[in-house]
Length: 139
Length: 216
Image (tube, rainbow over all chains, first blue to last red; front, side):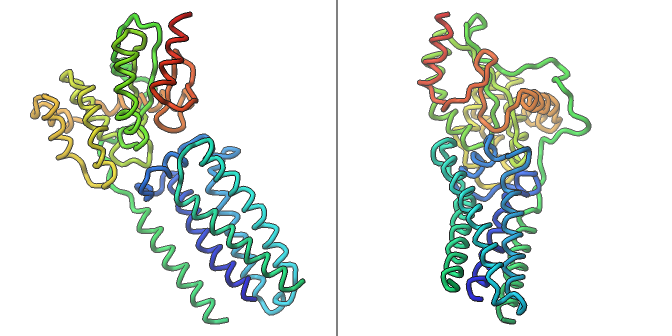
């Protein structure tokens, strides 16, 4: 149960980070709070949009799915079931792989660091680790 | 369990409030009123520096509030001017591409045009990028721009009158639309003899490319 609670909190934090970046991308935010300016470099690069949709929006959808699944997994009916943890682990694995690719782009292609993106990468990695811990506990 | 939901709810409320506060837009001076023109009404195609007969033309799409544009202007542009523009190899054309999330980008571009009206565009361009602290504070830079304009040697009264008139707003929007039509996604963006330049924008890289083009 504990790992699903941890994932819910982390997913909510990740949801706000990706929401912030997405709202900025579509022009609904003021100045992007970043410090180094790297966030704007990353967010206005060619890689900030995938299939015509801002990359941050994929984060919004992913974190929302993790949040809903983790909270659903806390319901008494599903508490002892392994399926929610498996689903969380699967989604988090996709998220970690995608984040790793985006982080590589920042490092090797765009040559700029977006702190919010790095924060999101850390959050999804922590979610993945929590899901893995949940799977092992039940193994 | 209830404590967990209270904590999650609290986090949601705090996060939502922070997002709401961050989304409160600041006024954007220099914004154009009415529909945007496809080209500037006066046919203006950007300030240039360099020889008209230079074999290579570089078009730069830039945003005065963009930190990477400032870095390019401060670190690379002096060498570009010395090695390529002063030697007659390159003509440099500056086009504005104000990004929607930079509240004072259009205002700064307008300040440069108002200085340009008095023959001081490049001096104002350099001043706006050299002291770039205004772009980090989020505060209205009108007074700072007045001081910058005065230092470039413009008639301050005429400059202020120009700024109040907002008469170059359509030029700036036309420049942005031109960049958008060419596929500019971020700033600074460069086109060398009409071809998008995608490599790392350093003076050395521009020199290597311009020299090779000039030899053809």
